[in-house]
Length: 258
Image 1 (cartoon, rainbow, N blue to C red):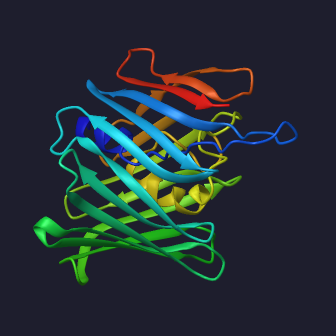
Image 2: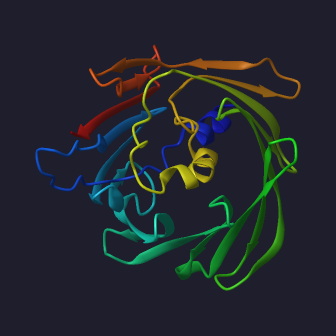
């Protein structure tokens, strides 16, 4: 169960922006400047940079992780995020993530390759008639990913938010339900972020599609449900300054460009 909670809360995908200068007639959008977090004892910090409201760079320091210091560079195609390149502290490209969308600007495929290992993993998003989304994985090398993964995730939605996620693999099966606040999402003003949030949700249950997750209930077959409740402090603009659990195992602090 601890490994499952670490998987669900690991702050892997976070986004950066630097607000552009504006004249006195223009309202400058609220953009995330920095996120610091503690996830079950692991410390991490992310610093965000932008051009206008488009992400350009996220610098990160993640404790006790191989290549835990580095940065991500973001590339856009119009208003959609097309690619994220990850570099380590030695400025070596350790991973490249490419995003593909359909004509409705819905995410349909994500491919992440690690050139040093000649490894690639592809996530394919299927939009079902009942409104749910199924994510199927394929592994392979940096050129082609054709080996069907045993991991399948299915997302259900309510009021525009992920209300439930079902996870299934050969070794593990569990279901997670989520509840949210009514406050602003820290990255809601970032161009193109909403289109890739479902991919980031796979890695990090902290953020919803529009709001902030404040309760997570994980149910593993044959075990009692595990409930995690988050508390939050908000600023005058109704953005979270901090989201945390009472026991301190999960702590997230936010600062913004305003």
